[in-house]
Length: 342
Image (spheres, rainbow, N blue to C red):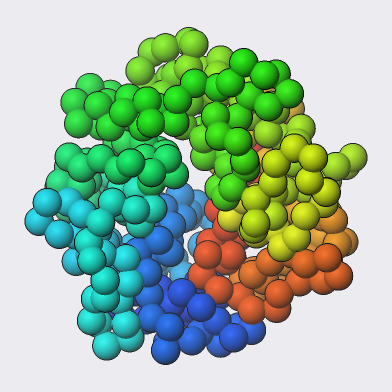
């Protein structure tokens, strides 16, 4: 499994001249459902993380697609930095600009382009977009967490960036400190979605804001979450409806995004601590996609390079949408990057 490289075939099949289609019927894109910033931002992050050795026949195309995704995000941006999430296949935007999750994810994607884009013009354009939206704030925790992780990306290459430092600090303030109950230290009464982004935010803030107390919180919360989302020798992650103490486990449907966020957080924990357990957890996340999960079925499609949309009690959702495919690619990228240390 550790030699399993990410493949970008299905991601390219889901991409057209405008952006990244949100949904698929099996492996066939469904243009009638259009595009969303949430997925395009994740797509830009994945492309900016892509290793040259792994892109295969798409080596000449990924840079062009990264530009396409960047333009999509910038066109979604209102003058004050708010973001419109949805666009139809004709290029028409729908809905009001706001500061919901799509705003936070746009900042995360833009931040990744700033820190890892490799193309100086793309990096400059992404920084301009980042600085516009980074002036805004959201009342919603996940939106601020995603935005804070985008700020951390900018701080990778500009440690003193004032706007990014302020946004990262404000994201931590919105999440708040863990509770006093060691059995439930989570800062909310229920696990919901993309849960591991919360401890990852604390880890990033601890490093970039030079605050060991935040780093300790991140490691403690991540250790607790990993324990909650592990069953014996495999991951058993929070289902789509969330989870709280006293509810039955395992829960379904389990979403690939939950696993990819756990892989990202554990990879960051390994970078900061060098402790092998975090690299081993990234391996568990990659193995989840390949069949080491509660249903014992692989979600990764070796033929298409895509990923099924969810793990069900007796199998899987066979559709291969953008979110799931990006979750697979992101997780395999982390596993490949950490492979030499295992």
